Image (tube, rainbow, N blue to C red; front, side, top):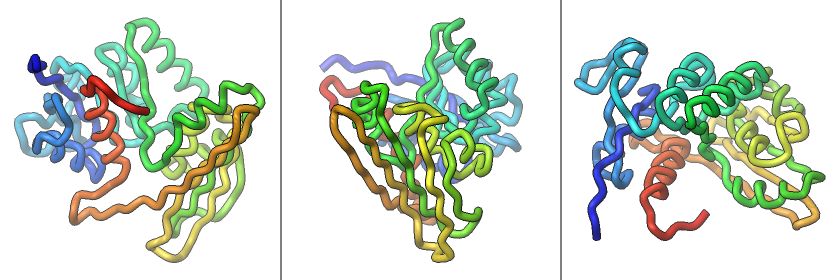
Length: 243
């Protein structure tokens, strides 16, 4: 088999998700990828770490992974799309029509694409298939421990109410019926162990339902959003793949 040169990642954010991704890449768990630069708020110690955007974006990379939240995608997305493709887990930023338009224009102008990685939700491929029917109906249910009051709203309105709590709903909306036609039912639960995300889609092509119970364990470096990024990196190198 012909060996491929390692492709270079620029990582935006080094919190719980970003750190888990960086550690896995360093351990060789992401296929033919290597970490080239990491942008952090304080420029934490390490030759790859940058506290300044200028020096970070001066490092040539093949792909940016955005793991720092919607504000980071809003502020840095255009600069990143000028240089490479971007994979993000912060879909909430796209609920702002102005931000969406700016990122769309930047990607089109420079020939790069922004991908919302599945994160803590399953079944985006099924939602995409059913959404070939323009009359598709899509609903997302989120049960979250603590936090905001319970509500039901469109994905766009839910993103305004919870700018850090419904990234998965925006990813589902972009895959399927759109931000204004995807409904979100958000329920706050006092039980700190309660966390569940469900998707339901119905169209002329059939019906689909999924439910994911994500596990987060900072001690063990476990975060399902980080796992979704690692799975996407591995898949990018597979000759034969599914999904």
